[in-house]
Length: 410
Image (tube, one colour):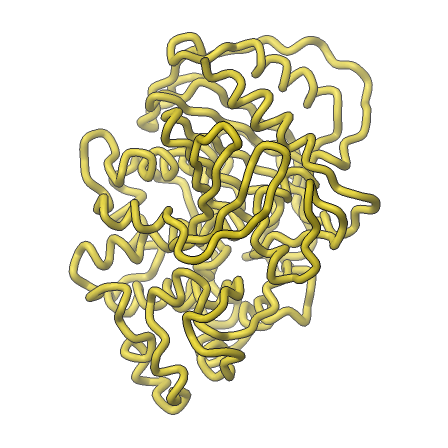
């Protein structure tokens, strides 16, 4: 589900429209930590190498991969003195997991009778975490695999060619919608993609609809396809359904066979739309262990290759993480968010290091920094960011990512 921000001052610029605020996935992390409260000083943190647990990750100490331990220790000492809303932080460099810490918190359970109450969880490395909209980047990977396997002809394929049973909903404008438009959120549908607590949002209504596909396809277009970005989880649900229809497999089963299986991911679940059991909530319903989220980042860092095996084509990976349209001018102190690809968010640091990331409501991130051979995973439970009062600054975000994790890279 979409990352939502209170309309307050953000970093060096403010953005008046909901459309622009939707394009700031990283700033949620700022909001997460801005609400920190001082607590009693804990015992100083002692670093330990992440354990090997037979899941395919090789672990190492920071010094073994050209990183300094001190900034990471300082980060943990800071976090342990505050109520911060984080559930996990993982760092991998040169293909080795060097930092892994978890914190107790809360979880959204989309398969519960009422998914709005949060469940208390003592998170650890065995706990699948709600990924929210970071699920979209995994759905994009599955679309790429389906194209690689010849199940889908390519991103130029027309949307309604996959939905002959809904042909009555097609019209002159909708007939031009392609998979590329869905992937880049430029389908032309207007959409309210609020969090699950907002009962009137289009996303929540879709999730509980008796026929979510009809709910999506019957909507009139607000503008012609390919003219404007409207962040829309419905687009991703349609992509997941296209994979299901072309493969003849449930989306999660397809993922287990062609993506999760090759990566050694054996603990995951994917929620479906509440009243349409066949339709996966491809835009936000995936639960994965943070270690496995890091594998997705590592796979994309290495152009679709994991442990020497090609899982996704290099062409798909590279196209997915490129900005698909005109850049935005959106800054924190050290980071510029530059646009949107195929369900991935590209950006760059003021040092010139380019990044791309999967991002989700509540503080779920898979960040890849190719020039540093670095993957960072963050999970969180700050689902109530909109209730915050006062200005939100970018300093804490930069403190965590730029001044601690990136600063640890020699």
